[in-house]
Length: 304
Image 1: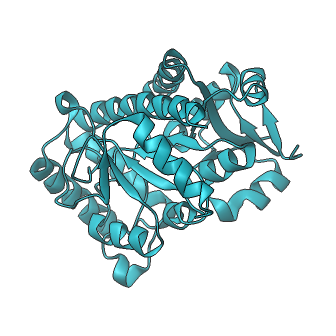
Image 2: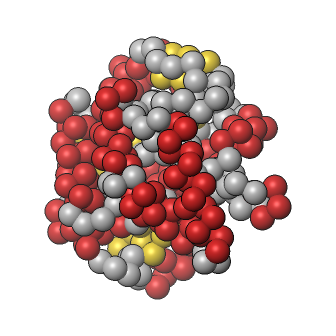
């Protein structure tokens, strides 16, 4: 057992009995949504996963440990504490040795999941190459993690604040499969379309599970993107959201907001500019991803 990992009783039992498990991140709780929507979302996502026959494992860093699964008190801490750091691969040694509280990003959650033997992860949207990334070199660690860590990430594509074309080029270069789940087009988080295609389309959890099992049995290291569009009734129009994003990006540049602060600023500003509709869309797509991820985790266990 890894001395840096701790588990809730529910997750420990699931691992012992080889039950299907879905990893969940904590950055979306601490930095992606306001209170109380964040804690309500976190609780419902876990309930959705359980209803589909899998076990949720929300991952975060507290008290010098990587928590694989959080109890109610710990979930509340991530939702309300104003001093939670965002954690990526580079931050693990410092966060664990210092005992600070850290919310795991997509990349960090993948690491925690892989250390615990969990291969399916549900999130909102992955990070990627930022707009003007060809000059700033601002590329999310999510992409390099996908190239090296054997975890399938169910998401609504890449956040539409990013350069989606360059993000997909990066994933192709590093051999990360981009699966369209019931779609031929790569979704762009708030919208169902992006103008870019996927590598291939699969329409059933069992098909995705067979693809993943084959990939990993071949020894092809790295994860996969399972791109699952936001439900039609909750989606925003691509043209509308693009105008809002451009305004928010311009404001971030004017205010010289950089690094880890960029995404939280943009998401908050987009929420303001859409009168809260973007947050409703964000919550809807997370619920949809949780459901599909649970179905995939169940199918992955059945395919062995």
